[in-house]
Amino acid sequence: MRSGNIFLKRNEIVFVVILSALLLVVFPMALDSFRLNLVGKYLTYAFVALGLVLCWGNAGILSLGQGIFFGLGGYGMAMFLKLEASSPEHTAIQSTPGIPDFMDWNQITELPAFWLPFHSLTLTIVAILVVPAVFAWIIGVAMFKRRVGGVYFAIITQAIAAILTILIVGQQGYTGGINGITDLRTLKGWDIRTDFAKEVLYFVNVALLLGCLLLAQFVRRSKYGRILVAIRDKEDRVRFSGYDVSNFKIFIFCFASVLAAIGGAMFTLQVGFMSPSFVGIVPSIEMVIYCAVGGRLSLFGAVYGTLFVNYAKTIFSESFPELWLFAMGALFIGVVMAFPNGLAGLWQAYAQPWFDRIGRRGAPRPISPAPISPTAAPAERRT
Image (cartoon, rainbow, N blue to C red; front, side):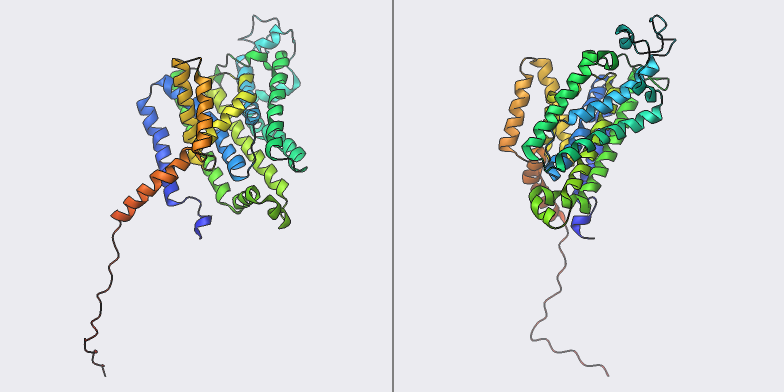
């Protein structure tokens, strides 16, 4: 196999091992339950960053509305958990038992039809994967088939994120409004609010993230991934070569939306609520910052960038609550201007050559054959 077709190169295998050890061993041993759950929340955003690497880094599609799909996945899981917490026994004091409390407050007396499938965990998981993909497909067909891209596509996705936020807030009786869906307690009878449950969900979150990372790496290394790079660099040339560019863009946009939805579902389980504050323009732009800081051309950099930015955000918000937004903006501007390839670019430019030199020094030198003297007598022929 040629090097361009290898699923994981040698250094990438090392990166996977290091990342797995960091998330599965170092963090659980070094952090208490509260901080570990905080890292788990950070990692849910990394799903979105992985999708942005494929969309923005590989295909050149900058989406400023990934919070849409993060929110759809999060609300899907929240609806299932809320229905489980709204059994007639738990809601006996309501005027209409058996429906979520915010519906009862808004004088809704019957569970809406679109809530009914979320009584089933299987249908909920299907909805988490299918609904964002279908929504992304509708947006992709409407935009890419008409060759809308670049800045215009970014602005349109940003507008859709704002519209969805307004819709969620306005339909308070069906979505919980500005407060979102809260008071989520159990998953199939298992209390998700305990420290032990948070730790279990953290490991599930890490396993899903590593699986999605490997799947995204497979897409990048495939022929499809190479066509995406060609579309990013010379879209007209790819189109003139006979490829339907719009279909490639639609697929990768849908794939990124599914990754974001998985992150949103895990966010709801990890944190215990979902609200429109994670759907709109601001969170969508923050997700782009995670990808940019880590490196929009590196899947591993996207994960590290997400952890780094969210950790910095937590530190600044705890110590300087009035300044953390300015600090995040300055971080994004500084990285884009000074290090356009993010943390991954710094690694490739400075750290990777140093490790390569060490590896070459430690490698055994090949043994060269002894030189033949020109005065040596020829060997006797054997009869």
